[in-house]
Image (cartoon, rainbow, N blue to C red; front, side, top):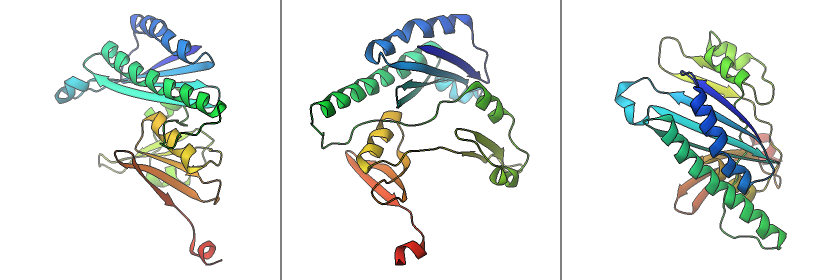
Amino acid sequence: MENVVTGRHTQIKQRFRDVVDTKLNRVTAIAPDAQRAQIVLTHEGNPRQADTAKRVEITVIAGRTVVRAEASSTDEFSALDMALDKLTLRLRRARDRRKDHRRGYLNSVPVDMGAVLPTTPEETAQEDEPNNSPEAAVASELAPGESVEVQVGDTPIVIRRKLHIAEPMSIDEALYEMELIGHDFFLFVNKETGRPSVVYHRHGWSYGVFEIDTPENAEA
């Protein structure tokens, strides 16, 4: 498996790269088909956030499955351990779900799966050099997986826009995707209706679904 380590607002030390290569052997033990792991280390410079000064995000591509986890701590090594614990748990759930489907069994409780394109070094560089205006960001054409980030005037508000190409899927599959990447919502195209939709986490094992349509289509 290829490990790609990048840093945001920090330099990556060789020791951290070596630890990543060693510890990510846990991933290939659970998911032998894992092809690539993207590890992003971010440094938070605000001294008031010293307890979460280091954030590690791990995104693993295994076949058509993309699994993501992140964690923050006082140092990069403990953040890596916590993120890796979350990641391996989600990988095991994905593996067990595949086994259940092979047996012809469908779990009635939605579990995990995630489809977020991993951040590439080129994309990171682009995020560090945002467009000059929100209008330019909205008007620009994006390639699949490409993102653009702009700051609104002199305010601290930052808008990030990204193009994600997704295959149509069922609501159950979308819930699986959402849980595996560790997000509270997931945008997808419902293959039953053809409508852009969002699944989101409410509380406990309760979920919601929003579907989007135009008045013209709704009246047809």
